[in-house]
Image (tube, helix red, strand yellow):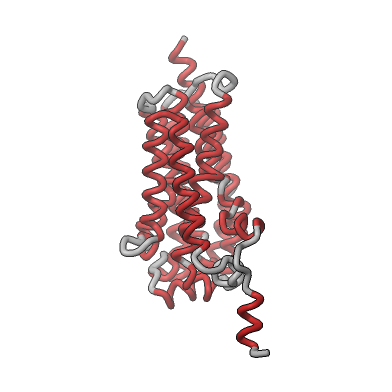
Length: 307
C-alpha cells in the first residue's frame, strides 16, 4: 500500500476528548481565575452570600474565556507551532481539518452566552476579553506579531480585566474603587513581564514566521531584563500604595514576596532561554501570592470604611 495512503488512514476524522482538552490548555486557566478571585476578595462584599456569582465568574474566566483564547491562538499559530511544538494537537494532525477553528468559535459563543448570567458588566468584560483574544492571534490585527502589544493585551485580559470584573460583579455592576483599579492595572503591567517568559521557548519559530516577540526584538538577554523589571517594579509600587493606605503589614508582605524573586531572576538573567521555565514555575507563584495579599488588604480597607 502507498505510504501516503497509510498516513491518511492514520489521521483521525474527529479529535479525541483528550486532544480537545489539550487544545484548551487547562493549565493556563489559573491566572485569570486567580485574578477574578482577587477582585471578589477586594470588593469587600460577602463571599459566602455571593458564592453562586463567584462560581459563575470562575467558570467564565478560566474554562470558558481563557480556554477559548487558547483555542484561537493555537489555530492561528499552527504554522509557528509546526516549527516550535510540532507535537501540539493541530500541527501533529490529532486535531484534523478545521476542527481547531470550529472549537475556537464554539467556545467563544459559549463564553458570551455564559456571560449573560453575570449582568451587563460581566457580559461587557467578557466581550472585551474575547475581542482581545481574537485580536491577539488573528490576522490582519494579530497583536502577537509585536511582543509589546501582544503581551499587553494578554496581561490586561488575564489579570487587570479579570480582577476588575470580579470586583464589579460583586458590587452589583458598580464601578470598582480607585484603589482596586490602581492595583489591577499595576498587576497587569507585572503580568506583561510574565507573558514574556513564555516567549523564550519559541524564539526560532517566531523569528522564521516574522513574530517580533521581545526575545526576537531585544535578544534573549535584553528581553530577560525587561521581563524582570516589568515584574518587579509594579510589585514595589503596590507595596508603596498599600503602605500609604495604612496597610503596613500587607505592604511588607508584598515587598518580601517580590524580594524572594530576586535569586530566581538572577539565575534567569544568566541563562534566559534555559531558565525561563524555572522562573515561571517558581517566580510567578510568588508574584500571584502578592496579588491575593493585596486583595485582602483592599478588603480590610473597604470594611474599615464601612464602619
